[in-house]
Image 1: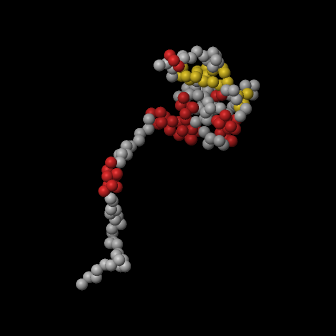
Image 2: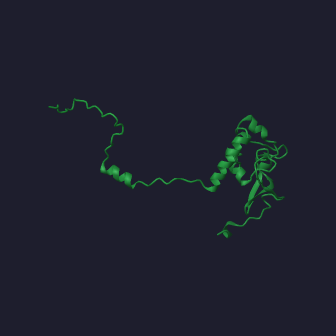
Image 3: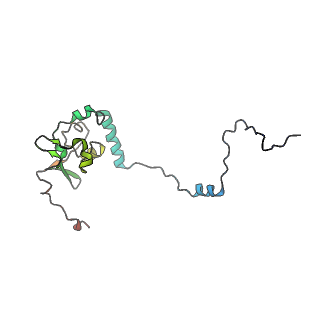
Length: 168
């Protein structure tokens, strides 16, 4: 006659049964059933374009922040001039960032430029995608189909803007 199992006896797990059923309370089952379904995320066209630009940068430019990366810069300072959007095109103006030393084309606060100047953007897929660097910039001169900002002979103060009250 088989022995009855008591609380001190061990029961051997059955061989080949690795997945043991996990018992769930009715509340746990309800929560799982009513949980939002996971919807696969798809990238937008812009996100796909930024990924494409990043791949190009990874294949054609030295890693950012390295001496080789910094050596690519010719020091023209054009990327430090004000830019505004006109329709779908970025315009490069004659007014410079207040941190740019226009005689030397050097940034006065280069090491802290992103913290000090909110409009200063690092060179990356976003600025390349918007066309924020001049076409002769070494960071983008070999980028296929790159279109830089249109150079205009106006400063930021000379640009005519539509008052916000007229936009609505």
